[in-house]
Length: 189
Ligand code: SAM
Image 1: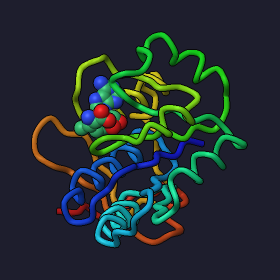
Image 2: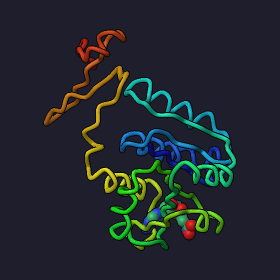
Image 3: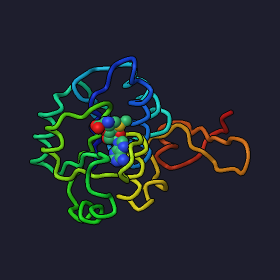
Image 4: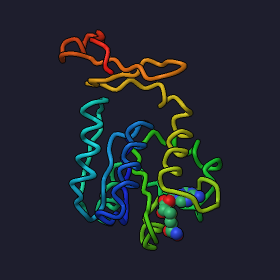
């Protein structure tokens, strides 16, 4: 399993970026997002709405003590902190994947406290230029799963996209039983 720990979220100000961290976590194959040290119901609501419509499994956890969470995770699996100052992703991704262990992927907002660099099993750079937690997470997960995550099916989805060269086609999947059978309902607009 992979969980993403979002550090330094400022309610209000970071709503959009943290929601995007969650959306990327879910759609690129993580099992949940943990928003450290604060509770922000508006972010949780946005993410749960997406899970309700587009499927899961994906868990939203908030308000845990981040340092304690990371320390506890280390008895279950490994901790990867994404930072431009770390080791290049190409040099460590095979070792991380090969461990076969549960992963906690830590991303920051503003300055990340030193303790996380020390607690992490790996400080991993997605290149050594400053960019974004959203981009860093997407590239990390994509490298970890070698692109296979983009073909994953989500369970319990009410909506699913029918790929088209132009326009938008979405199937609405009716009741739970038809969802479980993988049957397709009427067409949504
Ligand atoms: N200046 C801050 C610092 O030194 O901790 C980082 C700010 S950056 C906008 C927010 C987050 O994006 C970082 O905490 C890190 O998780 C991620 N990030 C940005 N660039 C990265 C890179 N090149 N490699 C890995 N992660 C990166």
